[in-house]
Image (cartoon, rainbow, N blue to C red; front, top):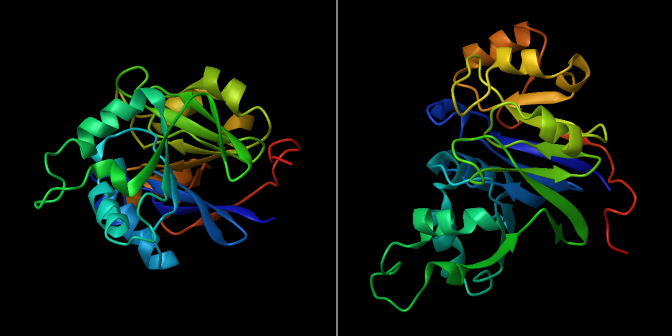
Length: 251
């Protein structure tokens, strides 16, 4: 099987031209599992695939990562063949936050008769979960408040950090099989996001060489990080992923 990661957007919350940070793991050229659902990212997904996402993992609930959910609801609820079928894998501590952010608005339809979650198959997850016979892992990262943001691992192939400060202790455990690491990084860090100097200070060169950086503020900032010798993702870019490790797929 051919596994790839497609970046739909790579920008920070203010970098609209770069698209909201969102990606899809592809299997044999088809969307397999989408990470987050930002507004610009969902538009890029629809334009590229010509269909709605069928499975998503939610890292956290800042609006640049979940602003597409109202449109996702409309796209699934009003089509009986899709209603209740899109699978949402959400770390258990994030479920109440996601409900408060996108699901609690009274009367999701003006005429009533519908709940927001009727459009979806909500699956709270812990440290590991299965999707289409493949085992994935979720792990907490350092973004704003503890237990509110999570990364995703496809063992042996991919680690997606989500929004985070440097997490050397987590990557020592969850990126120990030579995975590609898609890592939050801007030219300048702040209390909730990594800056390039943070990563250069806290990660060894061998780990940094596996990192592909996203969630930056401008094309100029991306170019500056490339000038320092780092891999920096662009909207629409795809990365080839290694085949899954033995035992990751159900027999």
